[in-house]
Amino acid sequence: MKQADSHLARRLGLFDATMIVMGGIIGAGIFSNPYVVAQQVHTPTLILGAWAVGGLIAIAGAFIYAELSSQVTESGGQYIYLREAMHPAVGFVYGWSLLFVIQTGGMAAVALIFGNHVFELAGATASEFSAALLGSAALALLTIINCIGVRAGSITQNIFMILKLVAIAALVIIGLSLGRSPSNTTIASAVHSSTTWQALVAFGAALIPAQFAYGGWQTACFVAGEVRQPKKTLPRGLLLGVLGVIVVYLSVNYVCVHVLGADGLAQTKTPASAVMRLALGSKGGRLIAAGIAISTIGFLSQSMLTAPRVYFAMADDGLFFKQLSQLNRARVPAFAIGLQGALAILIALVASKYEQILNYVVSVDVVFFALSAACVFVFRKRGQYLSPSPQAERGSGGEDVTPVNPTLNPSPRAGREASDVFRIPLHPFTTLFFIAACAVITFSLLYKFPLNSAISFGIMLLGVPAYFIWARRDR
Image (cartoon, rainbow, N blue to C red):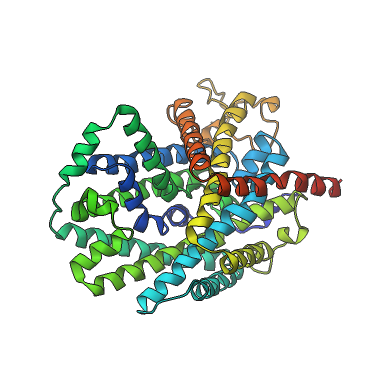
């Protein structure tokens, strides 16, 4: 592989990395998914508990990606980890799935939400096609902005992330000023009468929408090649970003339960809008519509900034269209950004509904989350993660001269000095907990949405013959 990352400008700092992490997680889900959780578990304690456990899963994932990102500092994120730890075919299938299912499908779905809420903000009723057209226009504009350069894209991302947090803060503050909703005794008694197994199954089902809303922390690793001091900046950005999102999500859900009650929340598909309408009337509904529109456009901006670096890395390996590895005058992979934007626009225009897109997007995504977590075991077994030696020899100038056995670092891209590597707290328990959570979510999706899951896995598996076609061409 060519060392193409040396041509990418390292312009992103800790603040940018943290904003990318938070922007990749906070989308439209936090404004609507609380009611889905409340339909599964029916007490305020269990509702908030589901979001807290979802946060624990997210922080476990952040620990894993912090260790991996401190070890591998090329742009490409999961593609690089899977390629180095398992096989280039596994990395390719991930990148293939990202382009044709995970990233572009998710962007198309969020673009539809953006279009619908802009029309709601204007007081108009939009058809599905009108919302798709408006969402496609937003995708096209963001594609152009991110082709201008990484700094233009990151500034746009940071602005929308700050505006998004302002809208959420307004929701929390205004919601706390309202009176507490009376609890629902019928629901409470029903919960007490359920068996332990039924309660566990219900709580597991509640984790699915919560985990959907928490997904996206890994995308900061896609731009590792453009982050200043990535071995330090990325792990810190991951942990700070995920911790910030946990605080935001628990605050929003506390307000929804506080104002609407557990029963009222379960019956309200737009809980954020319901809270704002109770506080400010129709003006409040329009205000939160603006907040949701800002949230979605911020997510799309983050997606445009990060994921194309994966396709860039694949093409640089000779495993994808060679144009995807070409940089424009601004030193960004403009062709990769443009291809992703075009596919997202196509899906937005031809797909039917947001929910149908997400059902098959997430089932593939969590599979690669678990595989990426398994990379930690592979790297450590190979000895690429070295423990710092307390007997490190000192040179005449006082510098460390502890020798590193080259056989323990077979890949110069993956192996790093131990002092530079973030280590997962409580590994392997933390890592196994995350893998088990991914397995539970995958099983739940296969059980609840077998058709959509089959479609997504079919597209993913098409990447296997595609890999061998490109690998043969590269010989």
